[in-house]
Image 1 (cartoon, chains in turn orange, green, yellow, brown):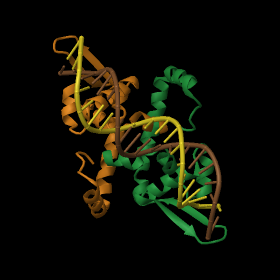
Image 2: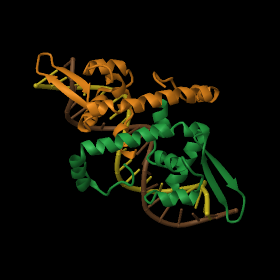
Image 3: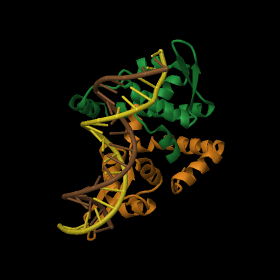
Length: 114
Length: 114
DNA sequence: CGGGATCCTTTTTGATACTG
DNA sequence: CAGTATCAAAAAGGATCCCG
């Protein structure tokens, strides 16, 4: 439990895994899908996910370089957790819609994903 | 997804919810179950969980004071996520036992919960 | 008993510029 | 294209002491 939590700790990791859950993506493709992340942070989280064996990094030594990221078998086993989180988020929003709207107006811009 | 992640962000929240999933507990009972947390941090995380409506706080104005914490209905809906995380942790450990042991020896003391 | 208040350290995240 | 490097800010976590 704590272990899974730690593996997912990091503001962007769950989104990265979510994107990679059904596709192999290049570095820039992931970057485009996350408009508010810096290159540095994306790289860092990708490295961390790779170190934890949740994703694989494939480097094609071409010019220009091409790097693809692919979810691993063990990484795929995290997807059901993300799906549950997604469903939970939806029902949570439904329950507290008004309160969440109030917070949102007070604090900042909306999220892409719940 | 991101929302559920944010609600669970905080080093102790998932453990607190785990403990409260099947019992109402007093402040000190939670504290005893988490040997390495300070009172300040426990209080802080409890307040945060309460603000997010995942737990309820019942104060009995006796002397000495008595405060109980109880999971809410919406809080209970997070438990399946924690159970999945727990199972994931177990299979992850099984897959990478050797590597995890190596890290453990290098870094520090073991966890109570995976 | 169940906290709150202060002060401090560690960790995480971000902005910006540069490169093979 | 896919990153590094440097610097700075913010967030999270912790130690310690005090209180009704």
